[in-house]
Length: 458
Image (spheres, rainbow, N blue to C red):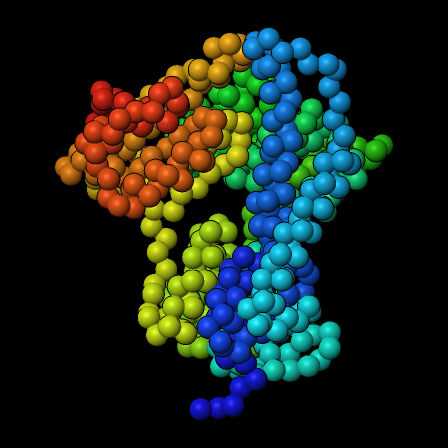
């Protein structure tokens, strides 16, 4: 066997890379990890965690309004953007430091600089020029915002979600471009913080890929709440002048804003890593092409998380990391399992789903029974807020097995996380029906929906 400097060299200090390096280090392996920016990756630094903190901040405006129906008198409100950003930065620094300390405690050697491949077993640190060899290399460099689908004049005047977390001041008028997770969540954040917000999307409804009923619920809720949504729109150019930005659409409209957030796609971080020189095959978007064990075209080079362009979710990257460690260092080949992965969009209210949508179930050849309940949440019978929740179960009519659960409502993500366990165990509608309800909760709808809403055949 060749004499390598390390058993494993990980490139990328995000959730997946940190988990893999830490687990391998705790097993006594010689492990190194290189991170050119800050430990924590997209999720911790410019993704899930700061996003959720901003979501919490944006919800207080409605909460103050709702309190009146319960007898509370709230004095004049005032929001300070700089306080939110400063407190967010403090929390992100704390979490990032925890990531670093946990890696060090596992005996992993850390290099705080960019790493690139020289050949299939050799890594060079770009700043210091030092080179190392490793028996196994793990690519966990994640992804980044990309505007390549929006090739228009003036696109450079827009910002991405990365910059949105560090704005010096809260813009008075914001345009958000896109219809996916990031666009929808930031549109709600800015709207909730009092910005005049417009969401512009080229499709007919936001959140393509989610269940159509939930998409309809969200579109209706956004309209009720005064969050403007312009669908079937494409920007043709963005101009800057007189202290404002002017976006021109293909409907001969001119939209004016102080900031334009472009959330139109992401791209794997593989540029300049030397992967192709090392023989690693890449996909059309620059993603590392891998098999079910996360192994690339070079047998000892693996890739996990967003850089593979499979499921771009932080818990998936962590799951991929654990499967990698079992496969390579525990001699237990473990393929990744991306089936029944729960997901949520932190809109107001939230959308959360696990399993097949109605459309996907029919495409897969299932005959389905659909159970659906739409209602006004108990809290808002006194708050007076005009809002609706919807719970939906998609059931295999032949086996009674629940194929999918989709919720639009407050705390939807918390509920779906638990439902995912049941679906992973193969729960049936009869088993849900046999479960005693916890009253009064919204979640009890899952075990009290007895009447079938409708059935469909493929």
